[in-house]
Image 1: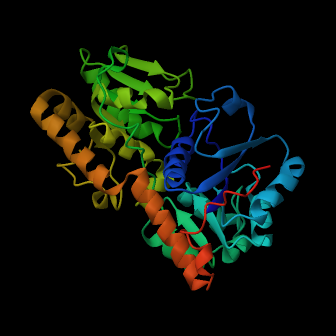
Image 2 (image 1 turned 60 degrees about the vertical axis):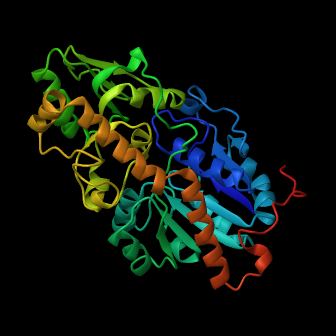
Length: 377
C-alpha cells in the first residue's frame, strides 16, 4: 500500500519520543513492501538536531508553510491507500480536514499522546492538533494508550474504531551492545524535563544518589532548568542521539523509567523507552501505573520501588546475576510482543479489518500492490 503520514518529526529525536516511534513502525512497514510519504514541518529546534536527516525507508517531505505545501499534500492523498495524521503535528487540524475531504480509502489518526489529547477534548472540545468534530470521520483512531480510554474515545467522541497501537522498538538497532565507558553508571535516566515528572525523578534517582556517594548516576535529556542542584555523583547530558541509545542502556546496571502524570493516571501507556531499554537487556526500575503488569511481570521482568529506599536496596543488595536475570527476562518479553515487525503487522491487520468493514475491494487491502508507478512529487 501507499501510506501518507503527517507527523511531528521523523528526522529528529531531540526532546521528543515521536521520532523513534515513527522510525520503528515505518521502517518495518517499508520492509514489508509498503511505500511511505512522511510530511514534517521544518522547525528550527529539530533542524539543528537532526540525527536522521534522510530516512531511507520513506519519502520525506519537509515544508515551511502549510498553504504552500498543500498542492503536494493533495497530490499525495489522491492515490494513497492509507492516510494518517499524528498527534502534535503542527498543522494537525488542517491536515485532518484535508485527509477527511480526500478519497483516500482508510483515514487514521495516530495518538502518541492520548491522555493529553483526551484532556483537551474533554475541556475544550479540541487539542492543538485535532478537534472533536473530526473524530467521527476517522476510520481508525490508533492510540498509544489502551484500557478504558479507548472506549471513551468511541462512546463520548464518536470514533468508529479506537484501537491500541503501542510504541515498539527496532530489534536490529536496539539490542545489547558492548558497554561504553562514556555511559557507565549504576542508575541512568533518559527523558526530557517535565515539571510533573520531576518529583518522581527526585525521589527515585536524586535521593538515592545523595545516599550513595560512591555510586554513579546519569540523567540525559534536554530542557532541565539550570536552577536544579544535582548531587556531585549525578552526571547531566543534554542529549543522547538515538544512535547511542543502545550503548546508553547497555552500559547501565539499572535504568529508570518515570511516567508523565496524565499517562500514569490513565494507565496502559508504556513509554517507548521502556521497550528500548528492555531490548538492550537493561534492568528497569519504574514508577507504577494501572496496566503496567500487562506489559512486564513485576519483580521478574521489572522492578517497582515504593520509594528511594527500595532503589537504594536494588543498587546495594541485588547480586549481579539477579540484575542480569531481570534484564534478560524483560528482553525476552519485548522480543516476543513489542518489536516493530509485530507492530507493523498489527497496523496492517487493523487497516485490513477497517477496509473489509467498509466493503473496500480486495485491491485496497494491505496486500494491494506497492504503487510502483505512483509518483512521489
